[in-house]
Amino acid sequence: MFSRVLVANRGEIAVRVIRALHELGVEAVAVYSTADAGTLHTRLADQAVCIGPPSATESYLNLPSVVAAGETTRCDAVHPGYGFLAENPDFVKACEENNLVFVGPDADVMARMGDKVAAKRELAEAGLPLVPGTGAVEADEARAGAAEIGFPVLLKASAGGGGKGMRLVERPDDLEDAFARASAEALAAFGDGTLYLEKLITPARHVEIQVLCDADGGVLTLGERECSIQRRHQKLIEESPSPALDDSTREAMESAVTRACRAISYLNAGTFEFLLAPDGSYYFIELNARLQVEHPVSELVTGIDIVREQLKIAAGEQLHETGRAARRGHAIEVRLNAEDPSRGFAPAPGVIERFRPPLGPGIRLDTHVEEGSVIPPYYDSLIGKLIVWDENRDATIERSLRALGELDLRGVRTTREAALEILASEGFRSGQYSTSFLDETRLVAVGAP
Image 1 (cartoon, rainbow, N blue to C red):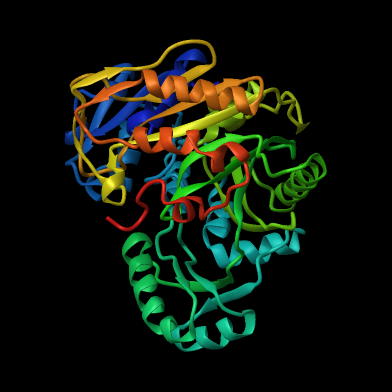
Image 2: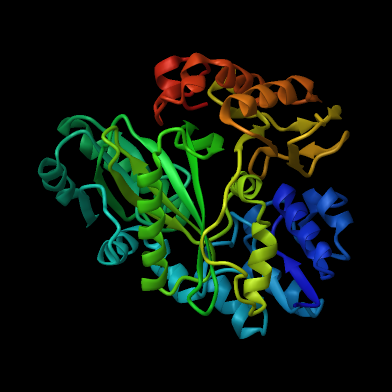
């Protein structure tokens, strides 16, 4: 095992990784911007290095500064968390060139999976079913491509994620303007304006499979996560197992993912994302070559610490088990963001004036905030994640409602009330929901801020 690891992130995920390192007896080195000086992750770490001013591009995305922090503190490895540099193959290469083990897949696999068009082609060859669509298209090719697969279609960024560079196009007359807007957004977000087309599957559910893979070809699947409760293509509530999957479909998806992992020589933690159609058919959409925000859902139903397993795999250890991990009970994760649902989930930075987390059996809260913490305007608005476990889905919903009701969080607008409304709704309780749940129910505002 490593002696010292750089945690190349901030917020709740930095706290999560630091705690896992300390449980393994490994020293943790934090990085921080001047906006994050004195925050919880910097105090929990054994050392903390300032890497720049508040702007993410000058700090957490500043590849040379992050690598230098690992070098100067004599770290053995780097854990990227999620976001920022977590899926940047140039960062992986820079770590390797400076004798820092990257906790994640290698640069080659990351680069191939980061190109959504190329990844789809490669994983289709490995046997995963795809949504009907096109390869990368120019603006003048999009109309013919859309006509071939049929409207409505989705324009999607080849280098994208999180809904950036994505547009729904329902009519041919809207295609040209949507293409220009989506390409410009993708270029600004990812430095690459390349787009491709997919047939819109509707109503659809967003289901993903969590995997762990070691260097000897061992693959462990940790079941699925249901991630269909979204606003603007970004997740709000996740659960496992999915109420939409039967045992045979679940086993088929996990078997297909296992074969795909071996076909592409995948290493470490990853998540295969799928669209699930009303008839039960499923279609691969992307592979996230990193830890996911919602990984605790899988941890609670399997009892496996995914971050700890990531570190062990990166240190050269084999998985203790392969195949399909045993599961028990049901888990739900609620993302608590500093956002105002009444204004289309607009960011709502500010100061946490009061913070009293809920307690009791089956309740976990992953967070980096305390009373007096500042939620800055420079980064993602995530305050924390409430993850709840119980023996079955109905009991987990009730426990989640109780926990959210006990949560005392004041000073900034949050998604807490929206989550309470969603979890209490008949549509969610029935389990018969899709990715358009919020648009259809109008429980909370989902438009652009």
